[in-house]
Length: 312
Image 1 (cartoon, rainbow, N blue to C red):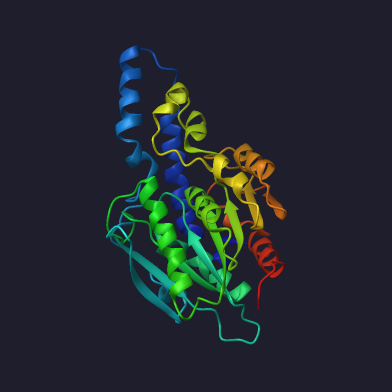
Image 2: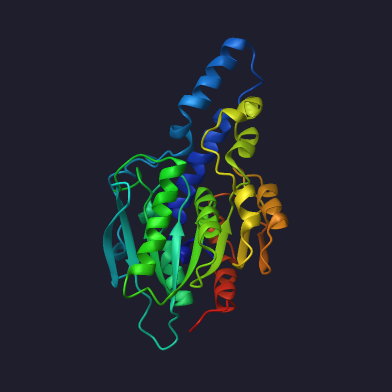
């Protein structure tokens, strides 16, 4: 699939450049003094939220959120969903085409650690047009137009809030739910599905280029900090939560040229997965942010959803 087909190539190239530049900057030579080590320790502990959740990247990401209408979608709602702890989450609910073949399936989307939900509308558009399903895009706290500031506990409240919204909304309460997560969003999705897998409407999980845990990712992104990973309090222990998912089919999409998250993380997650239905989809030319424009990406998602044991 070409970049033009996906409709989002420019954004993905921009974020990929930012991510690669950040990773390159952080991969500086071996520490040369205890003073630098102390500084790095302080940065890793006290500034890790700024590193893990760069919600202002790219420029304007906190103030300018593209709308579905900018991508040719007209049947949608702009929502503000309250969380139990008082935050207000920006969200888009985009309806499936009104065709006989439309599916009573809603994809709940969680994006990576930069940008906002508007930047992922080209992906949602492909899901809607190819799979003929509806999509709910929930913005994390501290991202886009949502209130608050991000951390692991808060993002999981946000994810559960989005899931509960679909279960309670009259239009979607009878729909099956497929949870989709990219990178950090994959870690969010794993925890959400692990917690809710006994809900019979939760029928699938799709993971793209996510990691084993934040502590296990640090040695790859910040090699000099490999001995300081224990200082990371934003743990995101996907390798702990994923094996507990035994009731939900899982699709693993791995860009084998991922320059941010080593592809070995995705492979290991696949290996420890205990779901009776797990599918491995490698993308030989895919890197961390552009896997979505690789040939076969959306076809793999469409095949996965069409083969799920839905109730409709």
